[in-house]
Image (cartoon, rainbow over all chains, first blue to last red; front, side, top):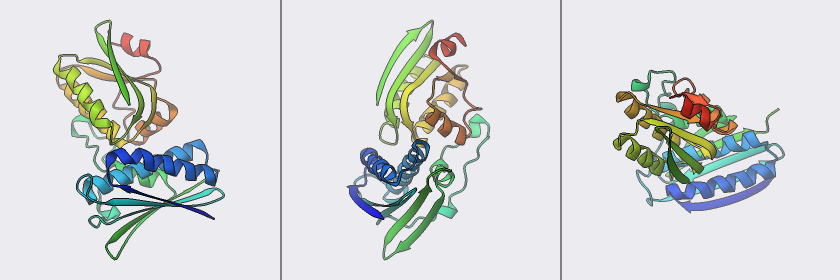
Length: 138
Length: 110
């Protein structure tokens, strides 16, 4: 098993750096291109939620990223000290709704759940931990 | 992310390059908004060189589509990469947007 860590200020313009870090870990795990892209989207959406809904703005705290890799498997953990967040309380987006009624909110968590093999959330001692797991396709 | 716009046969063609994420999507939304406010209501968004798009980019496109539809215009997409198409499909947007394989087809569809 290989572990790598990154800690950044919670800002939207740092998400690209986090994605790049996750892509490197996905390559170490030997994930295919499609799975690697899905990891980027999931992490991007998660970090966006942490900044927007958790910290309620930029520069209010940090996001720590821990990637653990084994052959064919990437486990990503995102840690923050923002407001508590319950994944299951966010309503699913109404896909297929008429354009005028369409709301794009909630899509981020939907993407996370759709694109990753396992998503779980926990909170301990004031720290939120979001775990995203991806296995190599096939 | 880079954005450029040109007029082709009375259609505004906006070409986007790079990543569209939470950091860059507001710029895309503003650029599209300026077109609509300038009475440009026939818009093609060329996604050929968009390597990556998160839900923030989708939000910008849906917001613009709503605005132009209200004034009888349309925002049509062309040439999304397989990855961007996957994001559009997962979000249920492939039935909301008219999507064309290339810029010429999208422009000529107006």
